[in-house]
Image (cartoon, rainbow, N blue to C red; front, side):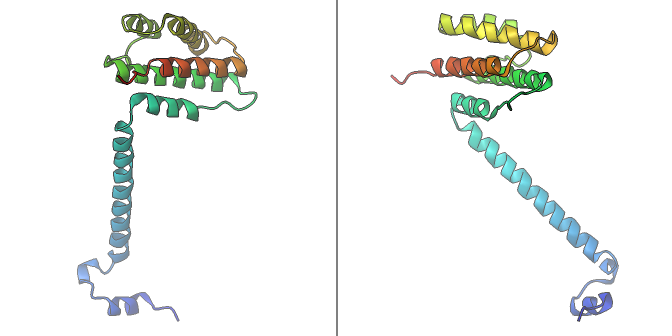
Length: 165
């Protein structure tokens, strides 16, 4: 019922050099093609994401951040790190300044130069300072506080969306 390896090679014309390595070469070819498909898909999704407005991308990234009930402090630390990373990315794309290498205080100082709402900047300053305390001083915060801080960032992004004229 099953063909022996020599019988299989009789059906397929394979040069003698490749007889031992035919299956290996075939698997390697499939692997290379699969890797190319994955890379092309990744490049396509990044291209598609770059065509969206930065506020939509930032709001989608923040919406994907979630905290489970009773999250540990290490998860909250990661949550605040991601939240400030998304905020810096958004401000970089929105205001065309490099915020990735700056500290959170430098981010706030730079945002004061732009046309931002003073009330939302004050709330944002509180969130950023709390994030620094959580990331570096091991401040303890509740899940409810983290969700309200997430909402402050969302409100800041929504308030900084340019209006159509």
